[in-house]
Image (cartoon, rainbow, N blue to C red; front, side, top):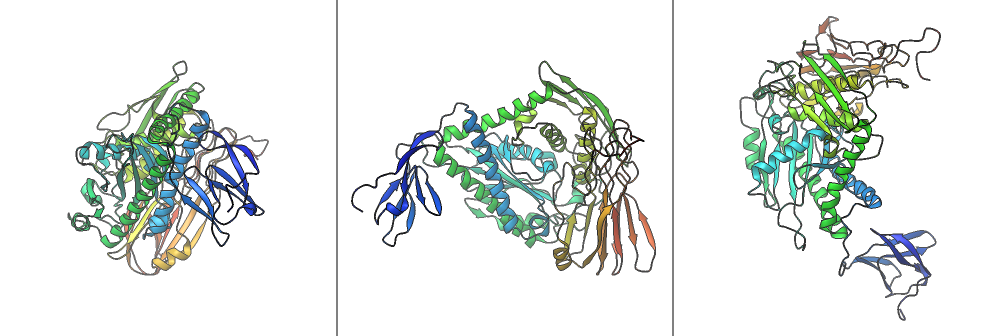
Length: 602
């Protein structure tokens, strides 16, 4: 190097704000030359951006080495709302959750999390409000804020760096017991704007293959109390000062009349969940280092306010209405939506819904709020994160002691997976936007004392004005995938004999409902299997004259040729050669069929 390198030009570029940035030709730089960021380096094959706080230095071998040198006198990003920064922070917050999800999927052990992707990751503000999420499981995401807030209330006086907590308690923001949430505070040290408390929280919720309970897989179809469904975590500390409290976790997993069947797998997945949270926390700290803590705090509020404004814009165009949805056991969900277009608010009133029952279809309040949040987020056409702001314009009335806000210790395992779907169909029905989907997750569990497996099975989605339903998809509150047949057959003693579309199961109409599927699993070893499903008696509703979707069917095809018809919920013993067959419901149709033309929008 002979003096400071000379730029080829200067250009305007965005680095948190518009700046005049030098552009250098890499070929003209010599060993020892250093270019401070922000800067742009060009060569024939690449463009290298040097961020603020970094420098690009040419080594003796002609390599470009990027080095972090810190930001002297960093000019923090402003806290006032700026449309460009809002979009950037939206993306950055969502990316933090997505990075955490990628780590969780890659490091988990269980098929449920690693292959089926039955997990969710999200970022929360200092008060536990949902800021942003990855596109994971809606029933998890809308309810996780209550879990984080429960931990904050319980541990406010003792929280410090290096802590993490576990929660699956449905009466403290959980969904059902297999869904174990790991929650961690994020602290920033040596920042002049830090007040000493957590700047935000990160959390993820993963469905564990087994957490105890009466049946393998922790989804007993006929449970009536929470204790029958597995081991309870109510926000206990599982990491203190950076150390995993493994002995405490093992003791809790072994507690009760029905302890966890595979604690080693639980611990392995918990470690993966902790790694995912640490990934998210590191990304938050990097964002703060780049933009400043005041800006990050401010934009956590701005993105929620933006979501609120987006929902208010939708409310100015909606019509209210009411809907009644009946489940197979005779329970009824009633909802009335009253929209005030001028004020751009809505009242969602669930009075008239059945009282809680001696069954497991009771849906904790967090699940009901998650369903409402999901529905109103789907009505927003803008590309915004699902977050707490979506609920701000909504007044939600849920009767205490009802199916949608039960009192403990009512069982809830089906409330998470089945009642949540019925709530969504009722809300869409009241708004007149879409016919009922299959309305169930078709929950199949099987296993023994060594192996446990759980899957939800896709079906048909409902049609709406101008569009057909979709065949063979997971709908609404579930968003998992199915395990690849090769992996399923390798890890478990079953054969996937059939998995095909159930033609004609979608409801008729001007726009047809989507078709369900047929899934046949043949067992190669003795196991206990359980099915937890709905719409085996009551078909999914059509809308505006459209026909209902076909009811689902569950049956066992025994090796000796006998056929055993099952109801929507059942626990059965499977022997080698027996097959479990699930035919899932179709979605409802929309609009009266046109006898003179095709029955689809195509």
